[in-house]
Image 1 (cartoon, one colour):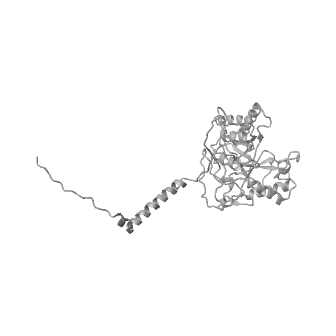
Image 2 (spheres, helix red, strand yellow; image 1 turned 60 degrees about the vertical axis):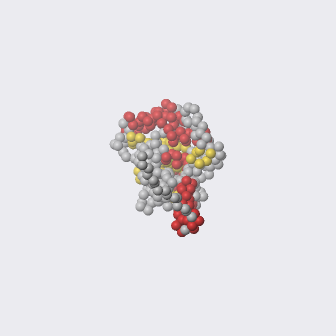
Image 3 (cartoon, rainbow, N blue to C red; image 1 turned 180 degrees about the horizontal axis):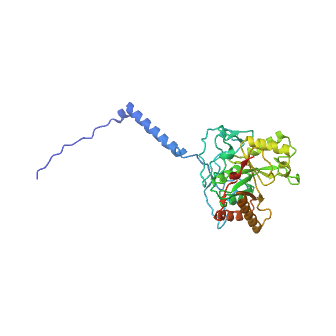
Length: 374
């Protein structure tokens, strides 16, 4: 067989010193170093457009600002408790006071919520301004109010509407978490302004679709035997004093569409005191929903009055009877609003009732849907 002679090729000799000294090599090396720096930065900060960063804190680290009983509140309501040696995700934004730099930012306005989904994260741009103790609600430049921006979206279907406000939340971690997680999102939740970690609770409630009210402590007829706390709005207080206390209450958190009274039988019956309160609430574009103590009061703001307290008698059968009476009122007048306190038995009864009421021909509505300007 004939043989074929192939030519031999010699590998070229590369002068590394000359290559490294060339300008092209320097530019290429700088490019590699720059690309590596970008990759390291992305790994450190996270990908662009991936949303806000979250601080991850071990569960065994104590929380000074968390509400009392927060660890117990993480346990499931029923069944065996689960232990996760991982992290808790806290509120993504600082709490007022001391958060002035945050609230001067240019955070884009949140998109309107769709019924059945989480409500927009508060605060929404254009509906707050810095105050002495924290952010205060304001009417937007286009005329929209915080009452409209923070209310749960609602579309009537022609059926009689029934609504409930469940109050006293934020003071007991277990019942607060039970209300947020087990009640239908159409149920309106109201929170005590004295609650620790108030903004965190409101953020959690809105994430579950609940609209929120702040409870305003007001002077009752049996004050001081029944004392609602240091920021109680007093019937004999001068209007500037009333406004100053109210601004402290409003600056405790953001994301609420209105206020509700905590006690207040004397305050709400006093013209000068109520007028100062109503003028301030109206000027900030908030709603006011009372427990029946101010049924004849107006003030030019969005208003609603609960026609019955469903747990005046704290027993399961009595609460059931009040809920049926609420349905009767809705049949007569087209809508009815009730209120209750976050007692365990009340929460259980309301959770069961809310899951069944629409099967009887009613529409479960947030309290904001029953407000009218008067």
